[in-house]
Length: 172
Image 1 (cartoon, rainbow, N blue to C red):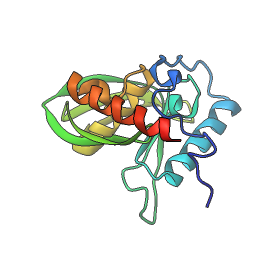
Image 2: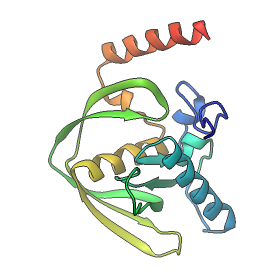
Image 3: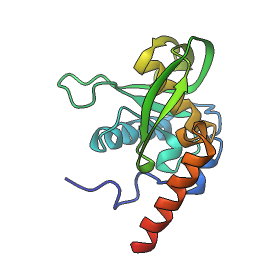
C-alpha cells in the first residue's frame, strides 16, 4: 500500500493551505467529481472519518466523510458548499486530524447540528447530525474556513504542540 503522507497527498500543519478559506463551488463538473473521488480514496487510505478539500491542497468547499471507514459496506458521503444552519448543545470529544500529525486534544463543539449542502448530483441536502457525526461535520467545515481543531484548544496546549512539532521537523 502506498504511503499517502510521503506522496504529499494530505497536507500537514503548518502548510499555509490549511489556514486558507476555500472558495464556493459554482458548478459540479467533472473536476469536482474527480476531486470527491480522490478525497474519498485518500480518506479511506489514511484512514480517517472525514477530509476537506484544503487538506489535499484544493481550495474548494468540498468535504467527504464516513464514520465507519474500516467496516464492510462503507458509505461515504460528499457535501459541496456545506454550511451549518442550526446548532444546539455542547459535547467535548478528543479530536485528531490527518493534517495535525501525532496530536489529539479535547475540543468542545455543538452536540447537534443541521448542515445544508449540495450532493454530487446537485441536490440540496440537509443533514441533521448529533454526537460524532456532528463533530465530524463541524471539524471538516472548519477546515474549509481555514480553522484547525488546534485553534479550539488553549494557547498553552497549542504552543506546546508547535514546539514539539518544530523539534520533530528538525530531526527529519
